[in-house]
Structures are given as structure tokens and as C-alpha cells.
Image 1 (cartoon, rainbow, N blue to C red):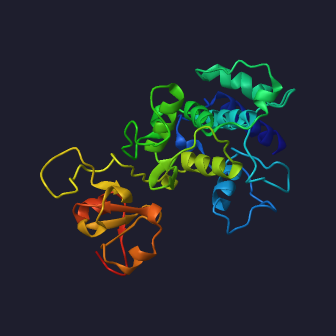
Image 2: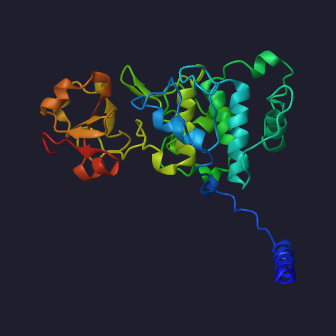
Image 3: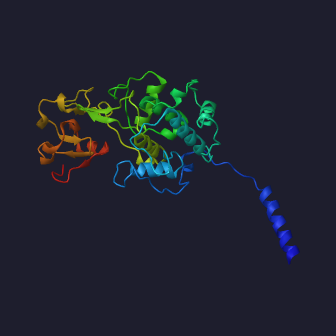
Length: 307
């Protein structure tokens, strides 16, 4: 019996050795839970970024500053961003996302980054790698981590739609690509939607939200900026060139529009709805067009006025 067992084991090992190992096909399907998330003392379940932090930690893309703290309000550095980009790239192409550490700890990520990215960031300065990364540079690095098909367009953001980002460079083009993919959304400020603040640092919580949208496409957002909507003239005529979605200050009489859109809640209302009076002015957009076109842009009808 023992001799038979040994022969069987030998045959099994021989079969295993002879069986070809196929590399995983590149794709977002390679991302999944790799480790158990135990939480951090500075991330509450009620925080807006809580689920994103859990996702990026479970998927092996980000780690805490230590075992106890994630430091959500802290700025992510250039080196930390490269590390995250390399993990993204490696897992997408079938790897584990794990790298053998060296001295300094980020050297392996610099070397890996330079093996696949267009811009090697040839800096010998420790202060550069350990300094907070700007929002624009973060977007550029993350965009280069994966091929274009991973960032399929969900939106139709046109050049000059983002108020504070002008197209024409590799870095700004990366920002527009991530807006179109629904990964970046910007904020609404002074009546302008989609403000990005490219030169500001980016927090670790914001980085986690962006990364979660990359690896879980269902989290990506519909973004509607001024010229990315159907061209319905605000006067109801048959002309062209006027977008149906306008900042509040562009219309003197709000009652002349068909619907009022809340860009913060993605809800649309009749102009006379009582909910409109409670909306912040910066969240209002006045729209002329059909109900179907508003729903087609991703808005849902108000439960009070039922437009």
C-alpha cells in the first residue's frame, strides 16, 4: 500500500510539473480582495471615504501609515503615489502587487515605474520623492499605470470644460481622461462645476476614493459639465451652440427654464418646487429640454414635485 501511495504521489507531482501555467489575462478582473481589512482608529464607518479606504487596503493598493492609523487627511507623497501606481500596474497584468523592498523603501517603485512609464522623474533628491504630490501629477501617474482601455469613457468632458485645467500637455490630458472615465469629478465652487485645483496636494482619503473607482468600475461617476450636455437652446428655439445646462448666473429668470438640476444630489426639480428654495446657489443648474434628456444625463426626479 505504501509503495502504491508513493507511486501515486510521484505521478501526481509529474503531472503537476508537466501542466502548463497560464498567465492571467491583463484586465480589471485581476483586482480582488487580497487581505482582511481590520480597520484604523482614524477611519470611522460614517466617514465618506471609509468604504474606499477599506477597498484599497483589501485590494493591496494602499497601506496605513502604521497598523493603527491610515492618516486620511494627510497628503500622499510622490513616492507613495509611485508605489500605488506600480501595484496597480502589476496586479492588472496578473501580478501580486508585492515588491521586494530596498533602501530607500521606494527605490524599487522608482525602478519599476521607469520600466513601463513614459516619464521617469529623474530626480536624485530625497525631498522630491517624499514631498506631497500635486493633484495634477497624481492624476498623470495613475493614468500611466494602466492602459487606455482600463479608463473607458463614461462621460463627454470637452476641452476647456474643467474650469481650471487647460488641455495641451500629457499631464492635463490625463486629468481629462480620468474625468471622462468617471474617476475624477472635481467640486462645484462659485457656480462652476468640475473645479480640480491641479496644483494643490491630494489627501490620502481622496487618493483612496480615486483608486477605488479605478478597480471597481461600478463606483465611477457620471460627470456633467457645461458643454458636455445636449445642445438645447435656452430660449427654446432651433438654433445651436448653446448648451442646455448653464450656471445659475447665466440666466436672469430661473422660472424661464424647464427644470432646475441639483449637481450635488443628482436630482432635478420643477422651477417652483419648494426644494429649489433650499438648494445652495452653487449647486443649481437651469436646464431647458425634455424630461427624458435630463434622466439620460443621470439625474433622477424629485420626490416632492415629481417632474
